[in-house]
Amino acid sequence: MKLEMRGQMRQEQQMKLAPHMIQSMEILQLPMLALQERIEQELNSNPVLELAEPADSQDSETDISEPDTDEQSANPEADGQESIERLYDLSDSYRDYVEQTDYFRARKSTSQVDRKLEAIKNTEAAPASLHEYLGEQWRLVEAEQAVKEAGTVIIDYLDKKGYLSVPLEQLHGRYKNDFDIQALHKALELVQTLEPTGVGARDLRECLLIQLAQGDRDNDFERQLITEHMDELLENRLPNIAKSMGCQISRINEAIKKIANIDTSPGLQLGQQRNHAIMPDVIVEKLRDNDDFQVRLADSPLPPLRLNNYYSRMSKDTRVSEKTRRFLRTNIQSGKWIIEAIEQRRNTLLRVACSVVKYQREFFEKGQLFLRPLPMSKVAKDVGVHLATVSRAVAGKYVQCDKGVLPLRQFFSGGTEDVQGQGHSWQAIRAKLARIIDGEDKSKPLSDDMIRKKLAEAGIKNIARRTVAKYRNLLNIPQARLRKKF
Image (tube, rainbow, N blue to C red; front, side, top):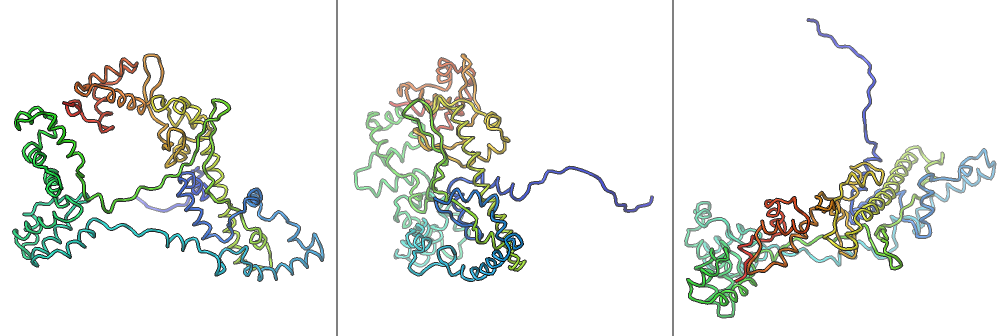
């Protein structure tokens, strides 16, 4: 068998995304705050891109299509001697341009306020973590050296809720050369006296007892209830507890109210991750004159962009070196792409939002119970774009309306139909389920099968009992036995 290499040509088609198409998809997927940060990065990296004044926002569109509309000003043969003189004057103005602080962003006068520096000065320091906070307290505790070392190890093994989930025997096995088991027990007792109250507990029962013991009120009954009947308390077996303790159920209910005020995760008081700010991308308002809705973009924080005309002309001037002109042409093209991508994002997002409001009109008029099933393919067909474009357009976006600030993706959901053929989204069904449970008699709470029958009476008959249980768990609603009030 003879092996040989041969060259041959064949014709085939491949789909490849151009760089500006990839950038356009990235811009479309960015939420408002991320888009502001992206624009700031482009302004810092691209010298040709600059902020446009409000009065010049219309001129920026002209700059996108053609940075230099005055072609004859760069053509000496067209204008003769006058154009040549203008070119000579232009070279002098290049040298003077960098000294004009009104146009050159990189230079700032000493009297001008640096907004970034001011923002850094006004930004609060990062909060201390739980381990840092406990470590500062532990350094002030007076104890033997072995106990101090054992306490440091215990603090290092606390989880974010403040619990010690590792047994002391296991810690002693790892650090038996540094301290003994008695030092660990003594250190744990001292750690449990630190702030926030309740840290160092090994389970929920111990966490509650630590906080009750350090309270100012007489909590003997509550401590006895937790110590002897914790498991029955979690199972809501109040009659059994009342019989065992020889008291009334009302007395146990009063104790439960006190216990409910205790923090079961004391470690989360420190070092919590702050909630990220949410800025709506779309605003839906109901018009006063009629029952129609107005949909607009909340893009006022976005700065208008334009291409610098001076650098655009400079990129076509043959008196400038080829390396400089190539650099300017590359940045001009990049600036055009980012401006076009932002404009395309605005148009796509607005069209998608208008389509959502059209199909979910009853939600904006009546509320959560009237949210209808809406597949993305239906909106994509209505807008005239690909399904993936709609998915990117709604990713991380929020809608502000009279019902609150809601994720735009929330309006896209599957569902089912009632006996009248009316569609109901799964979120609307969960809202109906929560309303049924809120209106139940707490002394006789509804089982999952009874809730299913209530939904059937409302017209939604094809819901199984296990689906009711799943939705109830998603809403963090306990089962009927745990919801019962005595």
